[in-house]
Amino acid sequence: MSIVLSYRALRDEPLSADEAAAIDIVIARYQSDFEYREAADAFTVNPSDPNASEVIFSGTVCLPAEDAESRDYWMCCLTDIRRILEDADWTVSQGDTALDWDEDDGWMLPET
Image 1 (cartoon, rainbow, N blue to C red):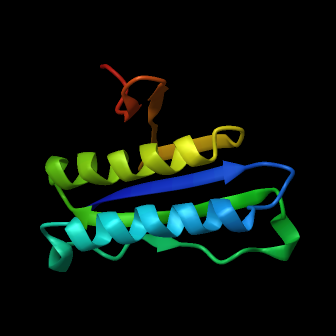
Image 2 (cartoon, one colour):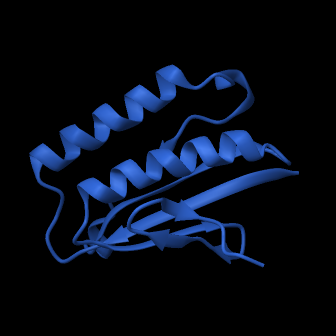
Image 3 (tube, one colour):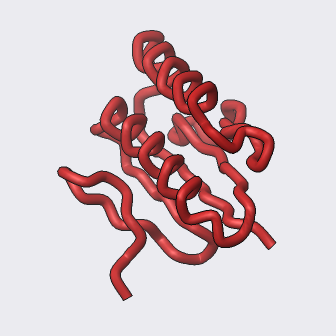
């Protein structure tokens, strides 16, 4: 059993070179600082799909089940990336549960 965070950003315009470089820096920083690197799959970014050009950024990160600390860590990474791609239409989920976006706090699990 694992925690899977899935993310997708949609926009009519493709990623600019500056946006792609900024995202690469964020991902590299979070991957190098991740305390439990061996316990999680690498932050996976899906390759571009020419048949879905509006999808400018998507992928997953898989974590051990019940690892809320690591989940929160990667939600912070996705928050930083979303702030780079502010004009994109974002979807982030944990399994079937869509995460909520808060301008101040970033991605959060919905209140139950």
